[in-house]
Image (cartoon, rainbow, N blue to C red; front, top):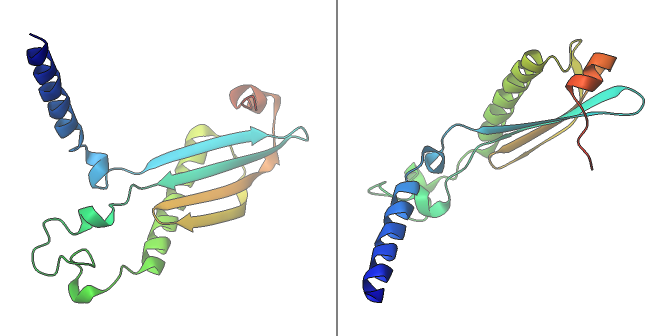
Length: 147
């Protein structure tokens, strides 16, 4: 009886694991975004915006590529991906999505200045400060999280 229970649980676990491994995010699905706001005591409004795209690991890149799917993940001629093109494309997408987020939320009504940004494989972060100071309504709408 105990063996039947163990076998049933093992089969159920394997079934669930197999189904979850086919999720769209694992295969480069929709990028996730993180938008964090903070209103300083002097009324200045700052934010961090991140766009994160799950990148396939090397083992996944080579699967199903047929000829040439060896060390370089099946890319023709064994070339590595052009990181500068990937960076430019990801930064452009992040800036567009950030502008949409600012319009959608109404956080920076008069634009913003970029304070800092960085790119890492599949991850762009933009730090900025709104051109206007916070109103009383802004402080209610965008409360600071407790640190």
